[in-house]
Structures are given as C-alpha cells and as structure tokens.
Length: 157
Ligand code: HEC
Image (tube, rainbow, N blue to C red; front, side):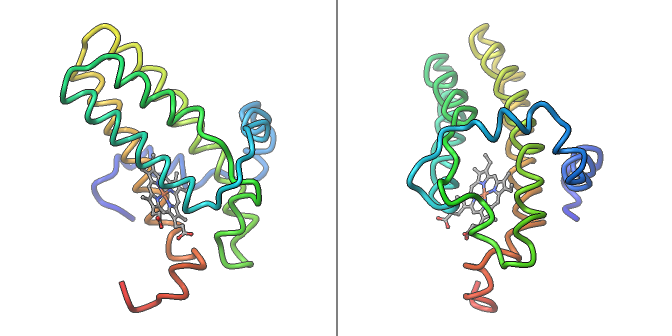
C-alpha cells in the first residue's frame, strides 16, 4: 500500500466490491460512456494529457484551460474492447468492477475543481488536482502489476 495516500481514500477505492459497484447508480452512467477505438493504455494517455492540462491551467492561473482539462478527464471515452482486455485473464472481472468507483472519484473531484478554478481559488483547485492524482496512483499501485504489458516486460522496468 502506498504510504503517501490518505488511508481512507485508498481503502474506499480498493475495497469496493463487485456487488457494491453493480448497485451503484454510477455503474450505469459508466456503462453509458462513449466507446472509442482505443485500448486501455491509449485511454491512459488521454487521462495523462487531461491531468497535465489541469496542472498547467492551475499553474498559469488560466481558468479556461483548467476547466477544459477537467472536462476532458471527466468525459473521457471508454475503450471499445473494455478495460479488462489490458489485464491478465484472471484479473479481468475484478478490474472491470473497480472502474466505476474510480470514475466516481474523478467525477466529483473534477466538478469541485472546475468550480474552484472558475472562482480563481487556486489552492483549492490544486488540492482537488492532488486528490485526482492520488486516485491515479492508487490504481496504478494495485493494478498495473496485473497488466498484460507489465507481465510481458517483467523484470525490465
Ligand atoms: C482503474 C485503474 C487506473 C486508474 C484509475 C488510472 N490508471 Fe493509469 N494505468 C492503469 C493500468 C492498469 C495501466 C497499464 C495499462 C497497460 O499497460 O496496458 C495504466 C497506465 C497508465 C499510463 C501509461 C500508458 C502507456 O502509454 O503505457 C499512464 C500515462 C497513466 N496510466 C496515467 C494515468 C492518469 C493520469 C490517471 C489519473 C487521471 C490514471 N492513469 C488512472 C490503471 C489505472
């Protein structure tokens, strides 16, 4: 477990059970996301650009750039083949099931971040940005070891 993460956030993200996710309204919203011809790693590249744009916007105190980055992060498309395809077969279901919980964190943080940025509250916007990055890192720590790409390069990075 990453010792830099707020324990509650980490616990909330990682202990989400498939049952819980299935009954959450947000699971339906997630399922309705636009499907795009990208794989999971390519979705991640879009997420990276979105968070970079948010950070650049905050540093430059550029409201429009920050809000656009937040929108991109929140409205990202889903890989047409599903997120599970990036994972080793035995982890596919579990990985798909944690997805809505992370999207929910991003949705609520980007909403707050957009309001803060629109009002020029930069320290608050930055706190929201950090909350987003904590969630990115929490998932990476838990799930990247199970990614097919990581298995194929085991020991090389
Ligand atoms: C639900 C879990 C999860 C969340 C949340 C998540 N990631 Fe990832 N990320 C992964 C996994 C798994 C991989 C490895 C994918 C692969 O190699 O196929 C990855 C890979 C990446 C990569 C490398 C992509 C490449 O070119 O190989 C970047 C960059 C990245 N993530 C950025 C982010 C950012 C920024 C966020 C937060 C906004 C984020 N990720 C949130 C699971 C997640």
